Amino acid sequence: MPDISTINGIAEDNIAQWNGSTASDVTSVNGDTWVHFVPMNASGGNSTITSGDFKISVFTSSGTFTVNTVGSIGTVEYLVIAGGAGGGKGSGGGGGAGGRRTATGLSVSAQGYSITIGGGGAGGTGRGTSGSNSVFSSITSTGGGAGGGTGGASGLSGGSGGGAGEGGSAGAASPSGQGNAGGSANSSTGGGGGGAGGAGGNSSSGSAGGAGGAGSASSITGSSLTKSGGGGGRGASSAGAAGSGGGGKGENGSTAGDAGTANTGGGGGGGGINNAKAGGSGVIYIKWKYQ
Picture 1 (tube, rainbow, N blue to C red):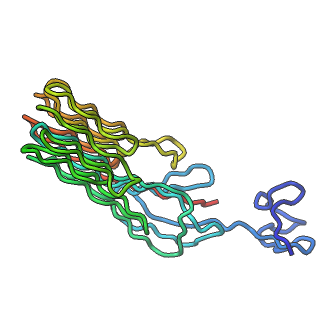
Picture 2 (picture 1 turned 45 degrees about the vertical axis):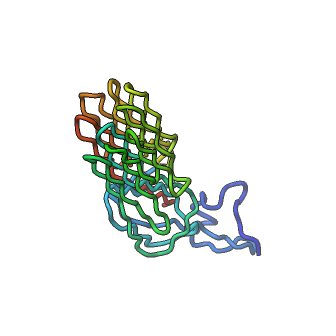
């Protein structure tokens, strides 16, 4: 017997009554199987957003996502952002943004899934500290690579690479597919940290720090969210601009830069006279159909 998808042109799951009976209790019509949609039931997160027929569990700190009932679909959409890296000091490079992974159709089963939210790396007194990984199920996003610092310390590889400090090289995006490389440095200036949407900018000799790489937008909540922006490099006269999506701007030669924004995976700004700044912590969004 074929499964029914519509009755008289109406989607079968939009029918509440059938011949005086509750539609969900009817298993066949005229010999054809009536298979009813079963919603997923899940819980967990620091907050929950409702968008149409979907709920989005938002984790800003580590916890557990619990699937109580798998339902008819049995898959979720996710956005996993790792912690951003700290910037370096001494013609310091900006911190690389936390790695970004997103997709639909991840199969889940009825169980609890441990959620790890990566912390942002600290700003360095030389090279910064890389961010920490964020993890959901089989999905791991890699923490951002530290910004390079004094003494030719290079930026490190990460979800997005750290910007180079003076005399050093920029960090690569590794593993690939989660972000972009950091920018190169020049005399007295640092390169920008890479972002999920673009590479970190190269700095200008004796002048401007490299801009942090742009973040990348997602509509998983029904509204546009931009995350994983790179940190700006230290500039002698002009700060490296913050990457959109939570990155922090670099020092401008006298005024300290900014830290990456919490729960964006943004990289921290590079420093020189002033201390470099920390990266922002990560965040995880899990979207599931509840009706």
